[in-house]
Length: 68
Image (cartoon, rainbow, N blue to C red; front, side, top):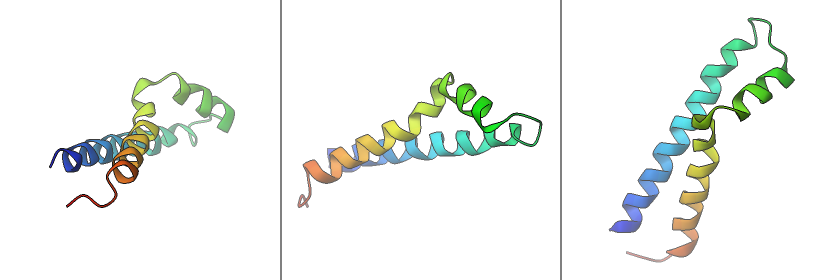
């Protein structure tokens, strides 16, 4: 049961990080270049939730592949 909870935590973090990255893409029409965008998101801690969520989900999937 704990691995389902960990998977859902990872999924929630991935969704939060992905939505944040998409929301910050609204700065592109305001005049930021892609380079400026990448520099900006590299300094925002909430943007690291996407890869962290993927890592947690991958760990749970590959660590407990046949758990019921």
